[in-house]
Length: 374
Ligand SMILES: O=C[C@H](O)[C@H](O)COP(=O)(O)O
Ligand SMILES: C=C(OP(=O)(O)O)C(=O)O
Image 1 (tube, rainbow, N blue to C red):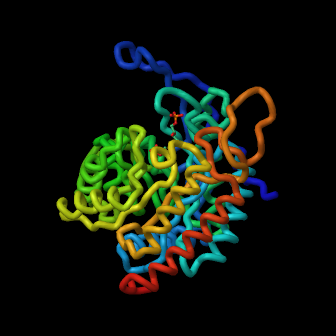
Image 2 (cartoon, rainbow, N blue to C red):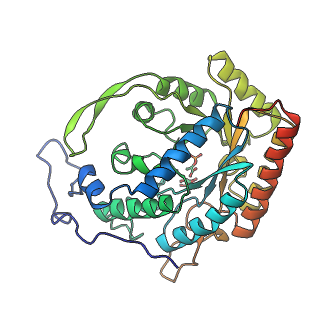
């Protein structure tokens, strides 16, 4: 079992409460965390990790632009709550990614911030002890150490961008980013995506609207200027150049899936009408599986059948998988190693089978569809 190198030094004042001045912060208190520059100094991007990010981003871009006929597969736990289990998953996935590399571009989900419908555990970054203590200074170090270790294994990483402050700490490690269904209409997140250095998937809204995801792609392709933090944590004007690699992710919603051929054609028509490239990703989980991990495997196979039949607009598939199938509640007892504490995930054996099916689908498409350059 691999273990994680966690730098021991931490902000001496991370536990000190700063009470905001009267009239500004009546309902919050703040605690210092490391700055992005401090974290990057403590845990710098190593040459091996930099190679993995560079290669990963280039591959994802080529697949999304239809310059490479492989199928992008964004796969991994709904959330990582235990770094040892996350690393064990990465080691196993790396072997599959190598085995299937002729047909699939595999990127591992390393999701460390979780949006919730109402309340619940919000992820390893904001709450690394999983107990509501919210030691973000430690969470930032844990998240970056984990991502560094995964990237050093040669696996490109996918994550959801939730806190607008997080990319300054982590973006150099990420090859694919998501703006989630709950934030895709947020101006802040769209502006953020417009300055990110990796392709970003815009989920359709949680009520199922694909139009808001198309709007998000258009918005993020344009330059913006907004209030943000510089690497030393000082406020400043952040000017972005626009991200040309944003795309739609179909994830279903409001009790209705949207992964079937008619749904894909409808989304493609919206993208074409907006003058945007029509390549998209389909999430087999969430609203497309009703969060049922057994149903997810079936949905992934149906998406694979569309690919095998020659649909070149489907450039990628998202899967939620972990070592052990299903999910568990966080509680006082010892958690099951490698089982999700958020959404139910496919187990490892089911994931291996689905990956093999998706690879076969990509091969069939190569035979039936006009060849894309490699
Ligand atoms: O993918 C994980 C999301 O955070 C999740 O679907 C929201 O889950 P919730 O409805 O349990 O908060
Ligand atoms: C939260 C996620 O998805 P969505 O935004 O589609 O609910 C996710 O992919 O983990």
